[in-house]
Image 1 (cartoon, rainbow, N blue to C red):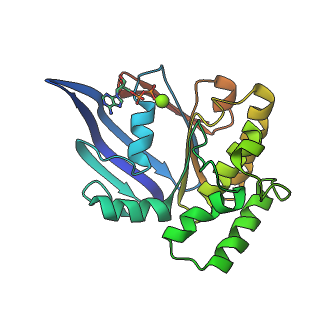
Image 2 (image 1 turned 45 degrees about the vertical axis):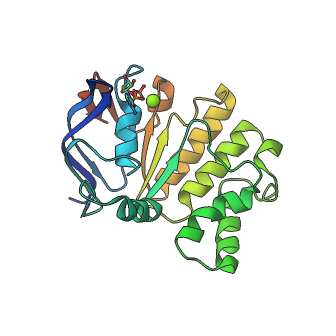
Image 3 (image 1 turned 90 degrees about the horizontal axis):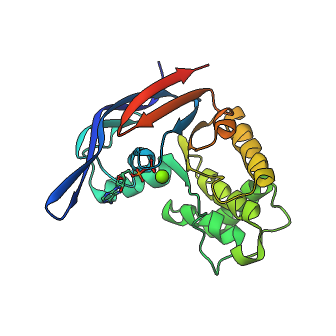
Length: 227
Ligand SMILES: Nc1ncnc2c1ncn2[C@@H]1O[C@H](COP(=O)(O)OP(=O)(O)O)[C@@H](O)[C@H]1O
Ligand SMILES: [Mg+2]
């Protein structure tokens, strides 16, 4: 079996003053390369906390996380930053683009950290923007783009270093329903071309794009159904 993600007994507590908030209470999860997974659950159930751990934006209080064969639960912040840039493409609900920066430069940014030359960065960023349907918008800044176009730029940025997994936390949460359908068709294409895609959503019709639905409740996995 080719698991891109293996987590065992993941716990995440947050200290708030004197109190400890137990957010993730022991999560075990294996995700195979090439899966298309939706994570659902009520607000506050721990979906974003789990995604941040999967995306190496955060480290667990307990338990282990093997990402693409490496144990990331014990890595230093520098090691994590490197693995994140190489292995993870993260798409956020609020796009998180640099505001005064063109679509091309936003997409090229992760390649700066990867040490790619400027000519190769521009070539690859243009290729990815073409793939996400923005060949004619490369020089536009985020405020010159619609919400759907901004999210396409963010998806391009997530794909540019050819990561092992694409994580998207409510990627259609700020989009109208027509634009959501377009963005989901983009994720469907990304999955069809061999990528592992994990997304969080509140909406059953968005989750129906995935082949596996994991439901969280109160920091534990309530159900995990493949179809
Ligand atoms: N940095 C933090 N400090 C304290 N509590 C947090 C922190 N991050 C998340 N939480 C708490 O963890 C719970 C789950 O949050 P989150 O993972 O964002 O839920 P979801 O994405 O499912 O809505 C919430 O009760 C939230 O307040
Ligand atoms: Mg959330």
